Image (cartoon, one colour):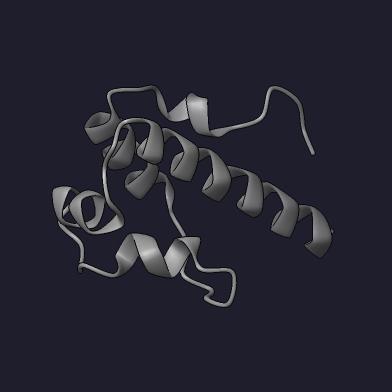
Length: 78
């Protein structure tokens, strides 16, 4: 079960990063736009860190990226 959790977490992190980069936003800009420290997004996107998004973060990120929070999730369970 733990491996599935890691896989879904990786999927969401990659999707947020892809959408963020597609919109031309830096990690720092997105972090500040959602009211977090300048390293919040970089800590999440770094493979060695264990920082995590929660539902509230994903909703706030979706507002900034002008997309739906469901855009971060896979179409089917992983």
